[in-house]
Length: 302
Ligand code: XIL
Image 1: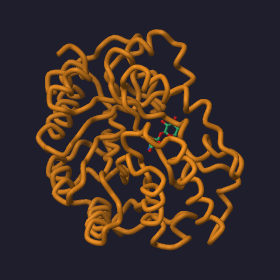
Image 2 (image 1 turned 180 degrees about the vertical axis):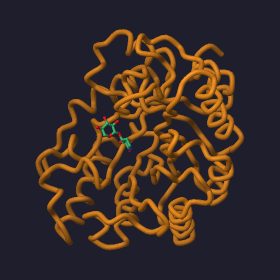
Image 3 (image 1 turned 135 degrees about the vertical axis):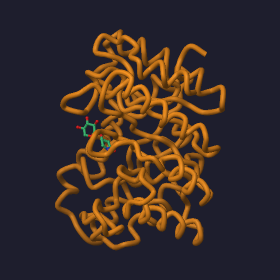
């Protein structure tokens, strides 16, 4: 195979990227997008602030540019994200209690209903667990509505779109020994045991010298898969360059391929200059759109 998508398809997987709507008239960008990827995540356009700028007034136009482009080209879409403590619209940020709970559930119901049938998987809840050693929930306005807010979110999403896979997505959950990883694991285990609808867990996988690819990354993916959920690598970027970076991309790709229920990999942008990271070269294409060593090692590993 000569593209990431075609190579991933050889094992029934996908290879995706984050896409920013404002770049869709850059022909270098869209050329690579069309050629290399068969899954798309909107980088910001399907977040709560983008889709519901005023309470109960939904704004789908920019997101639809991405969704329609993807579907028209036979690509699939990962919806990102229905509920998150970041990138909330201003009106939601200061809400609390029952009012906020109902606003969150209404957002999930409206958005998942609007996109019903068009979404492969939804990140229903993003980044709800705390960093550090507690293994518990992150404090946020959503968490303060009650510990069952995540479960309520998943139930609302399932009711609105029974066809989409429903995922929990987070970062720094790659190392099996981390308390945060264990906290998410226990939640998924609990959801599965009680029949709360959850189908998948996304591992953002933003790697750098502070949080490198852990030696037990594959173990983590496998342990989650053993709970009866799919796993996906959802926002991959790896700081570095040259052969070291290439080896890290290869290791991450091999880890996914070694886990039967790891269904695909998404990188968080196309060219290094598209990255959300303020500096560095964490992606598979350089600023001119040329394939990097990391591209070749990833393709070889697929
Ligand atoms: C980032 C986007 O890439 C930036 O453009 C935006 O300014 C902030 O959010 N975890 C996530 C993503 O789940 O939504 C974040 O995306 C990166 C970290």
